[in-house]
Length: 67
Ligand SMILES: [Zn+2]
Figure 1 (cartoon, protein in one colour):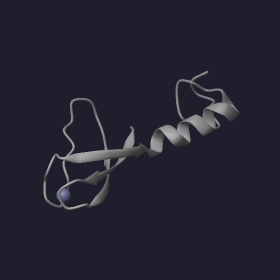
Figure 2: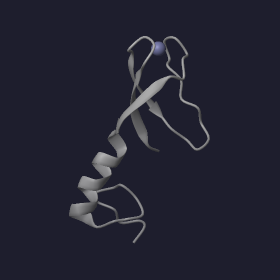
Figure 3: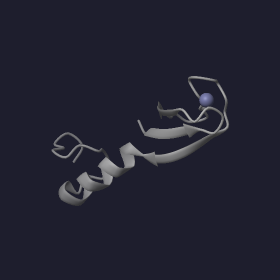
Figure 4: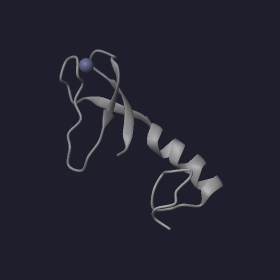
C-alpha cells in the first residue's frame, strides 16, 4: 500500500497516510481536507529496489514468490 506524506494547510500538521483507492485523506488533527501531498515514501523505496532487483510486480528486493 502506498504511504504518502502530507502537510495540512490549515494547522500545518505533518502526517503520513496510507492511501487506498477512493479514500479521502484528512488531517488527523483538525480534520481539514485542505492538505498538500509532499511525496510518496513507498514510491521512492520501490524505485530503488526495482533498479537492483528488477521485480516489477512487488516491492521486495529479494522477491522469489512472484517471478
Ligand atoms: Zn490540520
